[in-house]
Length: 187
Image 1 (cartoon, one colour):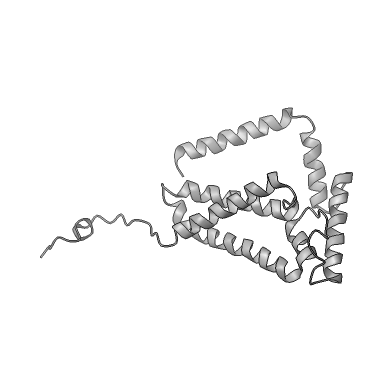
Image 2 (cartoon, one colour; image 1 turned 90 degrees about the vertical axis):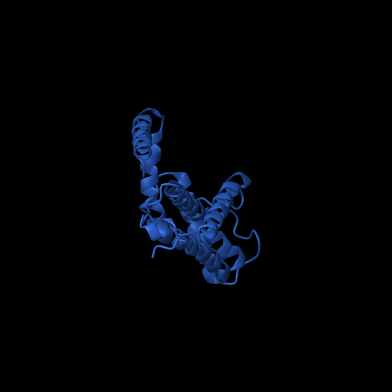
């Protein structure tokens, strides 16, 4: 990563830390979010999300082949929502597609992070795709067009980048005469 990239990351971290102190109710939202992730929701919204997720799991157990489109309501998790609506197999295909794409992206990281041209793009796509996974797992974007569009846009960008870079190899920086002038005869 270039020096200006590190400086930008440090600046974002500093501004975020300082801004956190001045935005109203931020501390309270962080505390309630942490409590919800620990399984002890302290506000109504987090409790409602937990109840919907547990109800969805029970519905998948009762009907593993699904109950039909939109039968789940809004579960706040697209993976669970697909499981309730279309069945466990469809949910596993959906989850498997996400994990397969994420694995391919992670496997490319060591090569592309060394590249000055593609390293920053690769890291940006990786972080964006992790964000997509968290939205699919904990927010549920199927029912909100304003949220589903960015999710599928990022997923398609990652897939296109993976396809475009599948054949590309990092350039060799060996400066031996045979590599500089492959057509020349050096006998």
